[in-house]
View 1 (cartoon, rainbow, N blue to C red):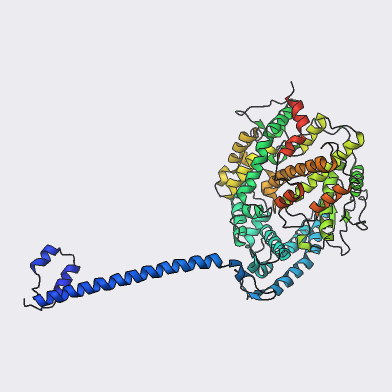
View 2: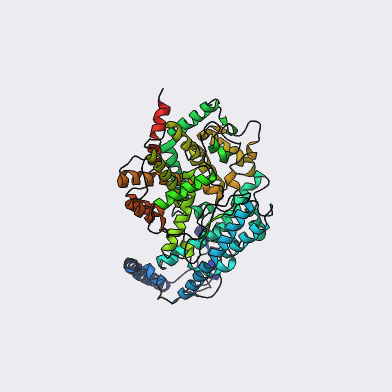
Length: 591
């Protein structure tokens, strides 16, 4: 092979993987001039590469410095602050670019349509429960469907979806958009028909319950939440972990009290208190449903249960004596006791001059005056927020948890006021009755067992065949409860798990609501009235009236934790509930 022969065969051999030792055997001779030129070219290439590397490193360093300066000075929210009516791009969802004028128009239409639809649904529900429809559910379902079409309809969501999670909105608009979003999760008309039907009807078989949770999660994710449980927690400005953590903190604080009350109830019933190895069948404490173990009233019945007429009159008199600044002087022509009869007219409150959010109250009352006073708290919340000039979307409590807290606070206030009239503190028997009908007996079930069960359900960790079994494992661990003897655990599940709307989380909201109510009650009694928590008279006291009014008129979407801290100077503290029952726990601990 002559010098200068093509290098192609050598390159092909090298690319084919032959070793250099073999290639050297066929090396192509080169002249001295060619070798020198090759070395010079190699040196030049190395020098050029070195220069390029230095320039590249300098450019990277300069870029890092510029990025650091950029992020130090840049306000990311500036891009989200358009002028009042400037067009802004939608975050997601169909439709053209949205504007603040479009948003205001959409919210105005929603607020116009919501009150009559909500009242129609409530009236239809009352008529159905009162037997006025002869058992026909169609009027109730029709009224409910009309409300769902507004609250969770695709048209509503398409118009408002671009505004979800928009920090540039003013507080009033931001809270209204958040309220629409939460309502849409509970009333997801955007889901396919079969999925909506699944949510509307309890599954015939408990094994279908995981599917219900999966559909709920699908509805929540469609609106930007991680899960349905996160959507429910968002109503209280919490994430799911924090929400469940608060429930467990109540259990930790009140567990000894709950155990003592449970033992006393079982002893009065003549039942064996059981042991961790042998839980008590839940039908011993109630009617067999795990969601009704707080009805253990067989030996704790009130000595003289008042009639519904007396209960409502007592509640109305207490409510009037609170003299709340935002309470209208007259609630309208419906502000009267229900008419007696087989099918009495409902007690209707007209909450403002426009007739918005009329409230329908049960005609029979519940048990006594304090309980009826608690029911009237809802009327006062709506009246206070209406008088504040808030749009209908924001009328009502800051969240469902605070709604329960204010209702329970009215109950506690009415009880302490009645005790103040007699000048006597409640007896241990009275407190035992309150503990059983209130939160104490169900604390271990809901704050422990139910919270863990709900979390596992939400995360899809429970298959159908294990739904009931795992719940009763938790119930045995925390509440020493078992399903009725001889019944499949899957056949006796928490009744709230099958409820519509926010039903499955209602026990947690009610539990935390009781804790908040006792904390607010403690503050009023000790700081404003300087009285005992069992004998504090709320009536005709301007300080108490102003304090209650400030709690009632915050409106939907306000952070209850901030409201609680501003009102009392305290963070959430479940120990107030335990302190209220201290005379009872001391009596139960005595030999």
